[in-house]
Image (cartoon, helix red, strand yellow):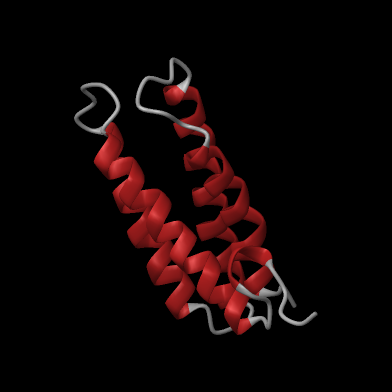
Length: 115
C-alpha cells in the first residue's frame, strides 16, 4: 500500500522547492512552472491510485486539485508572470505539506520536535 503522506511529501516538496526559487523577474519561470505542474499532476495521479487502492485520500486529493487549479490559473491567460497567483499556489502547497507533516508526527517544514 502506498503511503499518502509520502506521496504528498515527495511530489509536494519538489514542487514547493521550485516555486520558492522563482522570482518576479525570473527568465526561467516558464520552465520552472512546467516542472511544478508535472510534480503536482503526478501527485494527483498517485493520490488517485492510492484512493483506488483503498486508502482515504479525499482531503489531500481535493486540496491538490485546488492547488492545480490555482497553478493553471497562472498559465491562462498568460501575460507574464502572475506573481500573486504563484504565491497563492506556493502558500497553499506549503500549508498542505505542513499539515501532512504534523499528521505524520513531524514538525512543520520537515523539522522534528525534541532536543
